[in-house]
Image 1 (tube, rainbow, N blue to C red):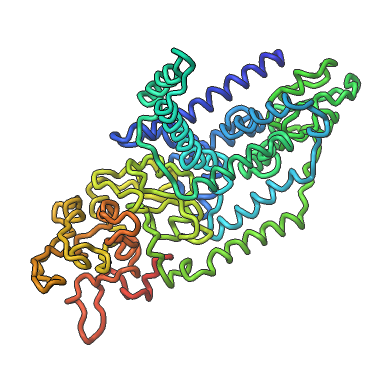
Image 2: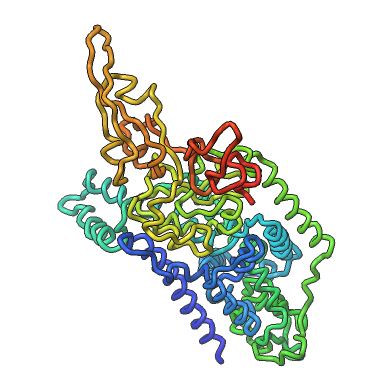
Length: 560
């Protein structure tokens, strides 16, 4: 097929896939009144790195993740076309690399192979070894997780902020020249975006600026080398490269025709060495057809070869020592993750409130790929990426921050959206009974306790049929010696599920007088300050009121 037509076909496919990615992202933002559709998980279900990491770390595979075998099958036939034609983050990098070529002249030096491109294979080895020992950090580097997480926490909120506040500033400032008003041009565009694009309320995320910076740096590196992330870092690209070693679609460069002009090397975004006959690297090639298009001598071409015949290609030459060092680094990373008291369940971080349906912490971390999909479908902006709250192993995994948003009582979207089962897809009835935390009062700040003023905001907003917050009429003595009856609130620990709405609506905006912590969460038997069924205890020792051998932690280790 004509190389120019193949290039345009690739660009159309890339644009269509990126548009689909953005549409699915936007649908998760705007369809908050519906249950999340399975289609929202599409790109993660096609990611074989997620499949392998989940299988190794959690020893279980959600059935839908088997769709990622399609990606591996296509790679075994066509090579790394997934990276060159499908991956939306790859498309973003491709556009940045195109700008780099427009800004400066493409040179063969930029397209030359570097031994540093083996780094992604060593990173993959380290991550796989960590997963074998139950510590999954795949999501930190996975391209789909990285792009989606950046979209949720930084790119989309920043765009909405710029549009809304920019339009407001123009409207209020009303810059004009004579009868021409700038707002006459901006207001129709703003109203269209508010009516068709930014349908949900503006969101804000902790660590959003950090994630934005990381994304910008990753894209900016394309001005150092084309497709820098894909060449040197991407572990998914490394995995697909291994499956592409004997792909059926192969590149050939006829040595008796090649003029050694190196134009093909200058336009190769993967440094796959198309300019060297017999040394083309199928593990690196994206199948972009750039080299075929620029070759005036027509010595470079793609064609299918026999699966039983080894391709005439160069060797990757992965160092066994470096590979062993990477694997040792993975084991070292796993040990580093597990040395903290929190990782060993010797203590529980009160700020680490996981979504309802989240598995026990270690199993949760083994499955979570830090994709941010649960944060995107949360209607109240309550789910936020962790930073240090869950340790290094739990970086950017979701946690509930009641001061920012609360867990909507009639919502179970996060579990329905999770592609790996880190958050179980609970029925709405089961979700309403799942305890994720416990509220408690700071009586030095609560108005009825500290200042002698009636306030029942927390009780009014408690969504439970039998409210977890109730009031007790208490007579207090005021400064002048007079007395007043105040309705002081209390928390019924046997009813509270830790949804956080009480903390969210507390009149204190700086530090609320009622706060929700991870205490009493259903998923951890040890994090239970309220001894349910206390009558089950006698002088003979604790009874099995938790359904475990020892409610204080013995055989019922919540992290096992």
